[in-house]
Length: 44
Image (cartoon, rainbow, N blue to C red):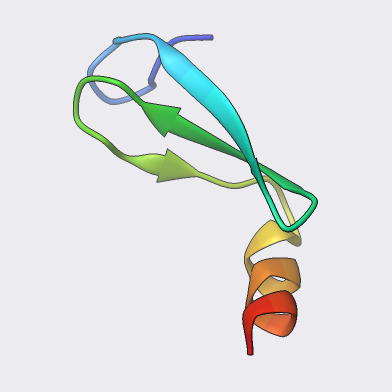
């Protein structure tokens, strides 16, 4: 997968059971629908 902003490769990692995609170029983080809310609940 490529970053929609800078077209660098995206890397997927797991945090508390939520898959997060992060760009290796601009370091942007991309979440699927509902993942931000899930992370907020898990880390509060």
